[in-house]
Length: 399
Image (cartoon, rainbow, N blue to C red):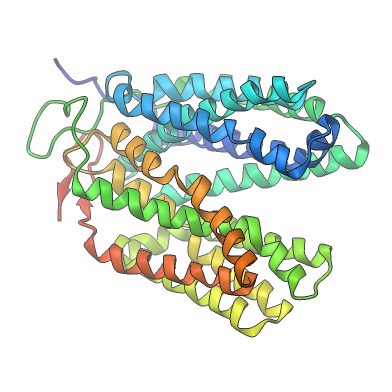
């Protein structure tokens, strides 16, 4: 069967269209996360009850990832990313308007399903655009995700200050995002999947995961555990050292801003140092930040430490996605979906394990475990085989 002819859309338009997907994902998630306390209060849920209800979301994501690994090579990422984005824009306002926990559970499951349908395909589309540019640009896409997340969170804070219902705020923001999606959707890449190394046709639809894919999935899992734990526990750690709640929140702000800023220029560092050395350097910076925060026990140094953690974490996952999408013997979309599937257990491994260890010892000791995960990332990165990038329909080749 002949390969799909390359798209005639300019690289800039294609890049803008994929950026829109990342912006939507970040803005919707940020807007939702910022209103969780209000939604939880409206439904009368305790902390334990909320913890049980939100398990529906990763369950929906898992279902989406299991389906993606089977069908994305046949459908292409574009055919899945668009329905995922539309479903996410529709279902999140419905979840925010839930009249009862019984309504919220299936809404969150659909939200997780939409997230899974969107995230892997949009990363695969980003890989396609990156090939046309002929240089690393993956981190810039994730920078727009961070911008969207920050914007959604600020919109939620403003709406909360004004007393606006969560579903009204999210619906208005999603309507604006839907208009932008309609304008840019036609420019999304339609190209074929990456071919096999040395071959001329598309890769098999159900190519088995290679050792490199398994390695990248493990690295993504470790990176996600570190990021998730930092998000969940950084503010609480500063409070445990005697900081006010406002200062504790500032710890998370330092971490988040460091990620957003680093992703804006991270691609230059990837091209300059190479992907393997960059991942190792990033893991070292992350471990240094954690050590600075937990060994000193100082609130100001905790702020600096978690800013360093954000600096180190920022571009690891985008770099892993770029490596996965350019594997020479697995279709790009399937490879990205498999790596996302390997990352999925981080929903349950990171923050809960830190909390359990903190309960048994202390939060300082528990957060010190992130030094171990960072060390594993640095060591395992040495086993990565970096493929030559495939430019505009070319064939990836291993170095």
